[in-house]
Length: 247
Image (cartoon, rainbow, N blue to C red):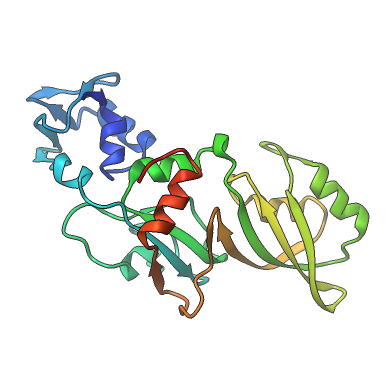
């Protein structure tokens, strides 16, 4: 069966649909010796080349979907190459004969905790898509005075520069000092730095932030920062089912 070229390549793990659309627009992909254009459809059995190199889609698409629960530490970046020379999470991942690892969403350099990584481009796309409202959980330490009125505002919704944002839940953690408190929060929006920006909007500062859950997956226990645990097939199926995929 044929399908949109960017969707087919994303399913095979060659990048996100948006990235692949840019590659197609740049004329870097040929299908059966013809330069591809946006809107073209293709079959995995077609001869598809990117930058002159033939892509083995059939092998990739028949490879089992893999997902890692990676435990990121601060100072690591979620990019393949960093111009500043900072350590990247991809150097810590297991090597593969075919395909490549794709990060599901991002964590900024100062945020630690759970990051999901997969070989499946379509699973990545759906888990990131706002229409599925996948729950992300965080432990956050806040410096400043937080009262009940502030918590209510953060639950009802706050106007940020890119629209209204809110927490789905806020639970007060164990309090050590009134000016430096831990909270457990959940959010369904995968917008850039949304947890930090929500707290910043109230005049308080996030001093530590750690993601503890993404959908059905929690932060792996017994794994050191910079390490990972591979999800078993049942866990992958449960994660995929959240976004209406069969894997």
